[in-house]
Image (cartoon, rainbow, N blue to C red; front, top):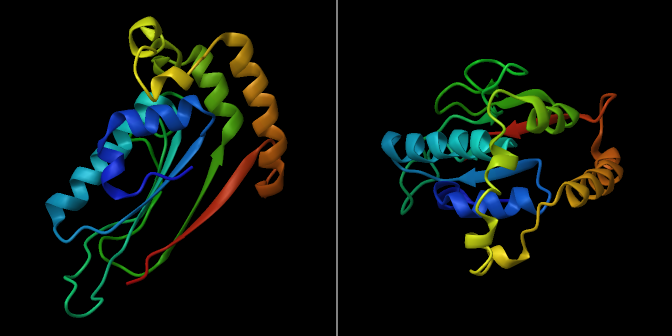
Length: 179
């Protein structure tokens, strides 16, 4: 699923995407300052933690030429911060403002396991007040009953096989930083 730049800063966007089945959210961005980059990056990390998803942040870097200002960024593949992953929640990341390719391996099955048994089960815990949120659009479409989550997991696993490069529903991502 896709959340473009500023949408990473709006928690409800990633929540709706994850509640509707996203396990990996791709976030292309174009920020002109270091502060802008870090704002999107920190929000992307927060969305990965809150929704227990992988978040692939793909900022545009370099000098595109006038009238556009230079892009500032560092591509990364982010994970939840829990025992199954690196403590900093970074699967892989590029050097700052460098045109490069970043690769990383993620385990989709680990997301589902962590949603059940992790130290912070925020994906499920966030449904505690579904009665309040479901009164408002677009939350009316969100329903996370345990049975529906299992059905969704099964359906997505079939689709994910098309993109699987390693066993056990693992995927390898390439991120290319281009101006």
